[in-house]
Image 1 (tube, one colour):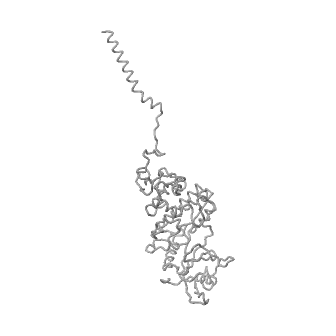
Image 2: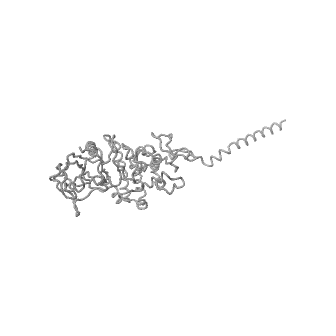
Image 3: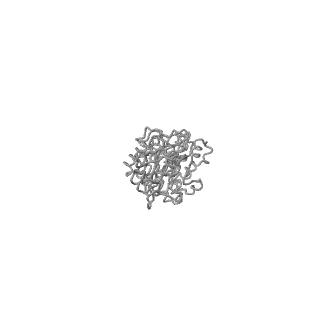
Length: 426
């Protein structure tokens, strides 16, 4: 167990230890395996790691925690990974996105080298994390290669929903869902998503701790990033999950948006922090110039999801889960597992989300559909597609109006005949 204010090695210290791992590694897989290298030397893995450096040894990724200037790992990083390891090893076999994480307390013997004198200042045995290496493209790279393939994108959208469902079921949140921390495995028509980078994971055993980072801005609620107040609990991923789902489903329907809206494989897909900020501060007059309303207009099957995104932005809260949004809409039972194919029969009219609230709607659905506030509903309610409205033919309508005149005419004729007979006999 590392101590508070523990002095961690530098990346250079780790490089030397990994090159001499037959002597320094305590784990046999790491000690006997082959370290991945390229023409520049040790091959680097991962992106903008704040305090972790990654090495590949055979089919394992080794995560080491380092210091750089004033930046260092959280004091409780070892305790966190101990709980993450325990949880993942117990659940990864039944939860497809999770990898088995092995926290090794006494993982690597590292010499701390004085950069000025090249002498060894001290030696420590430090913890490491070992996890399987995933030979698969990142989510961003996979989308960049396949966004024009409708079938693949539809399967990817379903896979995203499945991953989120599984994480919600076991009450775990990743904390940094984006284009780089999700790997995509494709076998035939089957797509499976795998999570990497578990530094800021939330799980029940970590409920009393503080989060260590706040995720990538294009996939996070701007209010929580700005004030560093994002809830560190099981709902932490819901904004990312919703934004990514909307983007994937929209690209499935309109692949041209990838280039038109400047998507890329690392930073963002269709929406960014600027889009969320403009939605929060926008007026009704700018409605059609904003991207979020454009998606609702162009992909009407996403209306309920986009409405929930806007409500979450305006009300400074996390959105509901994807399944909660699905249950709150009307949909075909045979398509309940395919959100892209969902047919929303109670889609919302466009309105000012700043004034929005959810109101109950009577109906046969077990949960009420999302609806606009009464003030924004059409003045003349439109019948739903399921209602059977009798239509009277014009001839029948005319006949109905003329029937009383014939009765009156016949009655007058009878009266006149009767009077004529009485007078003629008088």
